[in-house]
Length: 246
Length: 246
Image: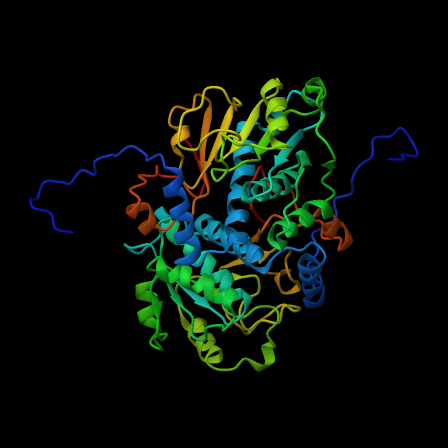
């Protein structure tokens, strides 16, 4: 290091960067193509970190229902698989997850994650009750692993549009994975669902900049060169923790 | 549950089971074939848990050398890839791993894990110094991710036979992954290398039953049905921890 004086150098503490959809996609492409990370590997890392975030935000002992039930709503793409991995780890942490996965992916990668849950006897719902009181009564919280940053929020189709209507009405807390379903990843949202907890993966997206609830950053594995290249200014994770509250 | 009386039932606490090579292989086959776990996924889970075990056994603040250097010796098969993943997470935990990986696997799965380390600027040694003092001086510890339970311990070939001779002579601690290199997984060992730390993956192997050092069980993901079927009697992991000291 070339210091121009003998003064101690102070690292200016730059604020964390909130990523645009385009930057988030560019980072993921770089991880997969240049760094040769595998999708299976990343989904496992992210899903595991989400389960730890849920256990931190909603500890077993704090749940209001007698059974530690959790409803995990999984979408058709990568976010859905992250939800499946999250559900599997929650089961290992002694929660009782139930999965609602209305349109299953035909990719074998996603199917493998589904089988892992089925073989662990995690129940799958065949439909979501439209009577919201049934959901409020049955579960302690809902994990929203439905639509990711890649979804066009102006054109949410069925069955997801209907599920969003239901999620807007429920009274139990929602924890969203990466980007709340139905939100535009690039903008603050005012009329969508209102999660109490947001689990940003790798780096927060622009829509999270003014998020009023509990906000975790999860998935600690990003190579230092990528952190620098995209000027992420990630906070320092404590010890060996894979998540941090922002 | 059918209880024959109203007496409170006490779960008898059965001792943890030490697996034979054959049972360990059968469990892995079941995970891959029936549960559809992916090798990439399992290697990531195990390697991450190993890095956390190392950080627990050798915290950054406790290291005797000025730099938090760690030498990771990786074998040609799955254990070697677990070592690569462990090295990558140790780098994220702010250790300074160096990898010695004398015979690289030609499988693209293992190559991907190698590229991930190379792209994170983790140095690879081209040879292991035969002068053990050089190793003692340069590193705080050695992680032995060389030979796994699948290796015939009566027929260890070069370069691994030579590396074992070196590892027997070094004075810095060794932490072995799953089964210490050169040991028979089915038997207690008396004349092989003497690791200070053993990180058993998923369930301990027979050779670990009388292990005198620090012994961790790492990799918490095993479906309950498999735990029951093989009568593993795994201890209860605390909270969301992925490892436990036995």
